[in-house]
Length: 39
Image (cartoon, rainbow, N blue to C red):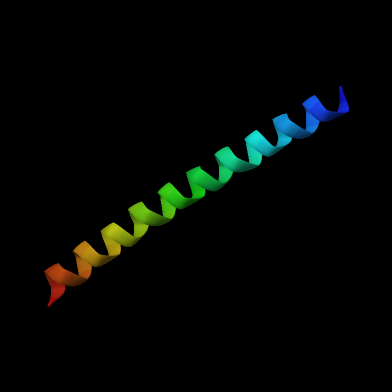
Protein backbone atom coordinates (compact mmCIF):
# COMPACT_ATOMS: atom_id res chain seq x y z
CA UNK A 1 0.00 0.00 0.00
CA UNK A 2 2.91 2.31 0.78
CA UNK A 3 4.37 1.82 -2.69
CA UNK A 4 1.04 2.70 -4.29
CA UNK A 5 0.91 5.93 -2.32
CA UNK A 6 4.40 6.96 -3.39
CA UNK A 7 3.69 6.24 -7.06
CA UNK A 8 0.52 8.34 -6.81
CA UNK A 9 2.48 11.19 -5.22
CA UNK A 10 5.08 10.90 -7.98
CA UNK A 11 2.32 11.13 -10.59
CA UNK A 12 0.93 14.27 -8.91
CA UNK A 13 4.37 15.88 -8.78
CA UNK A 14 4.93 15.01 -12.45
CA UNK A 15 1.56 16.51 -13.40
CA UNK A 16 2.30 19.70 -11.46
CA UNK A 17 5.72 19.96 -13.11
CA UNK A 18 4.21 19.57 -16.59
CA UNK A 19 1.59 22.18 -15.74
CA UNK A 20 4.35 24.53 -14.55
CA UNK A 21 6.35 23.94 -17.73
CA UNK A 22 3.30 24.63 -19.88
CA UNK A 23 2.55 27.83 -17.95
CA UNK A 24 6.16 28.96 -18.29
CA UNK A 25 6.14 28.24 -22.03
CA UNK A 26 2.95 30.24 -22.48
CA UNK A 27 4.34 33.21 -20.54
CA UNK A 28 7.57 33.07 -22.52
CA UNK A 29 5.64 32.99 -25.80
CA UNK A 30 3.55 35.97 -24.74
CA UNK A 31 6.68 37.83 -23.61
CA UNK A 32 8.45 37.19 -26.92
CA UNK A 33 5.33 38.20 -28.87
CA UNK A 34 4.97 41.47 -26.94
CA UNK A 35 8.65 42.38 -27.29
CA UNK A 36 8.51 41.70 -31.03
CA UNK A 37 5.53 44.04 -31.33
CA UNK A 38 7.34 46.82 -29.46
CA UNK A 39 10.51 46.78 -31.59
